[in-house]
Length: 320
Image 1 (tube, rainbow, N blue to C red):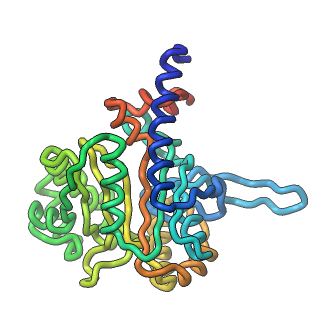
Image 2 (image 1 turned 180 degrees about the vertical axis):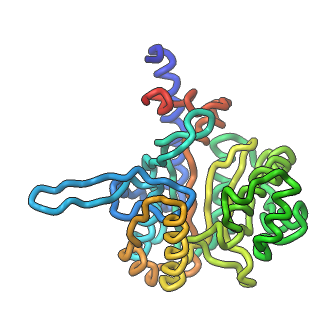
């Protein structure tokens, strides 16, 4: 166990950051809401592994579900019920996760949503929130994922084929056969060979215009070749993922089916589609935005530390 002094310092750091977050959203008319941690449909993303949970209710059958990887589905249901500006601070869970450095199987997520505004408005709020906590007033540059990929590899992500990816893989010593998916290979190539250059060049920036295959819950841009999704980076650390919400239940169902098949092919558990979410989407305004921000990483930046264990009272990597 840490010393009393260290415990007090870490607790105060968290209290200060969370107080600033609550003040920020209260001043903008957002409603603070609570969302469930155990749900029947914890997520469909092929790259995430929910912590599965078996729930046994007295006098009822057993139910299979999981701990949330994000409160997103619940938050969108609240939008569909008519709430217009909402936020939450909640624990979230990721199985099969790296431990230490910047990752944890359990961490705190801030999510906020507003109806009637798109991801451009969300980026402005993100700037204001993060600058207010970390200091600074400058506007952050917006960097196009699709243009950066084309500049580096010679083709746009939406034009990627197995042949183009295999050729790029050979040039960069990347084993395409381990992924056997064009979309996942594109994501790997970008993460490993483009992101380091951007992180070195820009201390704070937004990465925008993601491939549609990497934005299953986001609205497409008018040309249909990229999605209105962004990630924010500060000093090389990804802190959030936001987008203009996809509110078409038909298209959303189709994207869920694609993700479910990718999970099956990868040998991962496939949770049921959240039908209540799909029913709610038709009542959500277009545009609407949402953003998910990792509070632990924001606290790390505030404290000036590189390892997530340094800001936890009970470091997750030391519990197992």
